[in-house]
Amino acid sequence: MDQANLAAAWLSFAATAVGLGGLISQASAINDQLDPYHANRTAEYLGIWFQRQQRFPWWRITKPPPLGPVIIAKMAGGFCGVNTIYITRIPASPTGRAGWSTILAMFNHEPPVFASAVIDGDAAEKASLSAVTTRSGNADGRADAEAAARSASWIQLDRKALKRHQDHACIVISRTTLITMLVVTNGRPVFQYSDATGFRAGYASYCGQWYITWPIGQEAIVKFAAHDSIGTSEVLPRAFAQRVDRCGQLVSGVVRAAASPSSNFAVAFPGRKPAGTYRLEHAVKGFQGAHSGRHLYNMMGGRAFEVDFLSARAVGDVDSDAGAGKETETETETGSQQSISIPAGTLVLELPSKDDGKRTVKMIVPPHEQHILAQALDSLPWTSLSWSMHRGLRDILLAYGRPTMDKHRASLAALLKSTVEAHPEVFRARGWDAEFVRHNMGHMAASAILAGGGNSGDAVRVVTDIAAMYVGDWDAGRLDEVDFWRRRQRQGADAREGGELDAQAVVALTKLFVLEWSQEFDYQLYHYLPISLYFA
Image (cartoon, rainbow, N blue to C red; front, side, top):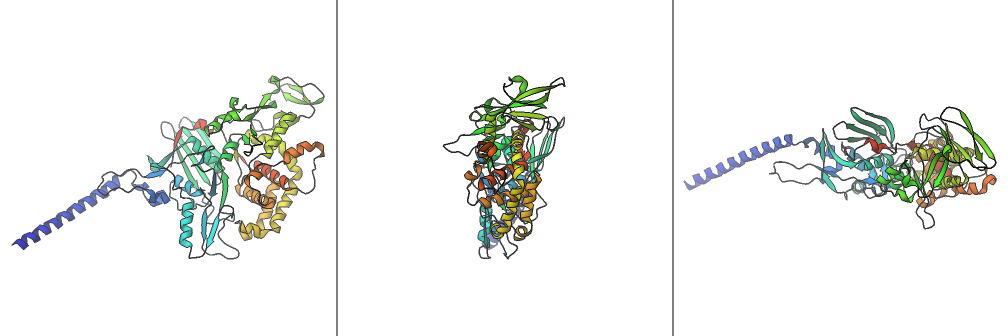
């Protein structure tokens, strides 16, 4: 009898356990379906961040929101505290559908490591030795995969709960962070609308497409999608270095010399002006009182009161200089023409107008300001990619430097082409595709130089890497600061126009080439954006 009761008790317990288990399973399934983040908790959506979610007990009724990284980027602090990042157009680690996971897989806080499965003489994994380490062999395959994941892991970032917006799980970023990411990826506007329904904009960049939407009465949301035309391999090195602080300076219209005890040169440029005649005037520490890119510079953590300013003052507001010189004509407000005396030694630049882009702005540049422009060109930072930059800065420096560039353009193109032909094995070691180096690289560089302008990040990477290889083991500080333009100004009429280009000339002219191929960026974009945005 006792055994029968015991067996009945155990059967009853087992039936109860099975019933409770079924109820709990059904409740869990129902709870999953009611979870607003149900579709956003998967590895397909979160990518590598799926592995970094908090574990929660099975008996908990409601699940907390999934966690995402805290992304803060600006000129003064770099991208998440890292100033020099290594950018890849093909993500270095698995990504999800979330745009922020894709960006973090393209922005690497250390030189990324890529595994190459099979290497032969003509085709292999592309990796610049200056920024990338490549390993081969099956034995190290797992270690390589782990290293590649670490290079884009950003595991040190703080994490916060994601915010749900429509069917997206978003992180919250500031408008400063958005603008910084746009300029670091060489963003340029494709379309922009602001009307009664809200604000919409699209930006193309070297890494992918950016979309900004801010409907009236709703949250602003940012989306990012990687390019779908690259495939799984490139003929270019897989990664290149990008300095966040330099990108922030140039989009704000500031050229700052490399930090050194002997130089504290920093100057900001004015924006575009309406048609007319203006005089460029150097104001020591005058950037804080300017309009131009001062607000953006301060937003990004800069100190505008430490920066000089080149102001563009209408000639009617200043006294004409006396003395022998030349005359230029300008149109008055009534449409009549008047002649203005230009002192000897003064340069007149023709610049695009703010209104229609036609070269109807005449900028008078006195000798002292010419020296400032020469130093600004010498102090332009080195880069592997074209800039998203302040258009006033670009207009003035291009107008000043292009006549010299045109005199040396053919020589520079021939030099870069011959450098590739003479050292193909060096470029192969730097991560370039062997066939591309043999048949295309030199011709592509020469054509880009001779074109005088364009819109191709790949062309800029080709030209800058050839120039960097030509000058040898120059570090970033030495590439940032040359003496070519100031030396020409000191020589004056005796400046040599022909002959072989030295290393200083190659670096200086290559930096001007990057200006020619850079894109204008609206440095007042922040006016259209809220303080914080959702990054989906």
